[in-house]
Length: 247
Image 1 (cartoon, rainbow, N blue to C red):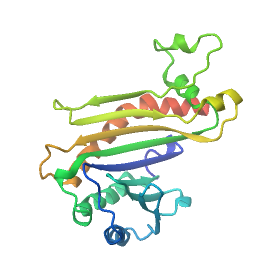
Image 2 (image 1 turned 90 degrees about the horizontal axis):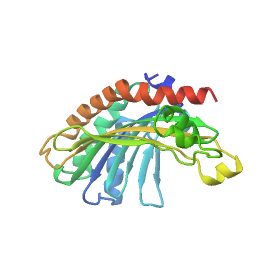
Image 3 (image 1 turned 180 degrees about the horizontal axis):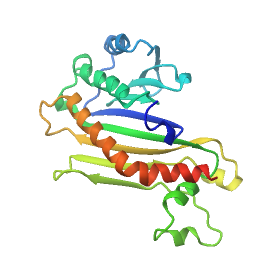
Image 4 (image 1 turned 180 degrees about the vertical axis):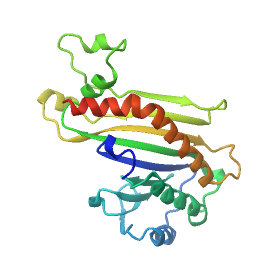
């Protein structure tokens, strides 16, 4: 069990390689890429081509802990939901980053940015925005607005983006995604759905030269985890988990 499992209902580590040009999507190329991944991770057996043209190879989602890799028009995505350890996710992501230059003909010139993302999901039946506002918005200058007579919180999805170097090419972003809408608020009918906390470290690639994708991933993942442990968990994840538990 990874160190974050006790903090939320689901936890994932994702990598996104954003490209400037469209990725190859010929049958032979796609199958060759996924076949290579399956040799390393033989439990990845479910291949799907979605209406959007996205190709996805994944493990059985019903296991709770599963890997997936997808090819979009201009993005390669690698995800591990509920990995047993952070290092297990590293193994997958580093393998994907190792083979994409060869199987998908991806060069440094074509890379727009590399993202490393930590995701925390909290299943909650109720007004998502209200519970996020209660956990994170109290004792702030916005508290007075939320206490207006008859007012109900309809949207509260705080986000912040920071530049981490002088060139602004290394950035981090914290954002919270809720899934409550006006109809649910009016009727009081709330399905069980996740409140998601996302923390991303993005490296824009233009001046990285011949630097290997795997080297950048390791640096970004380390930084991402350091910032999650020192700021996101104590200031966002734990307060949100505690507020949901008290409902």
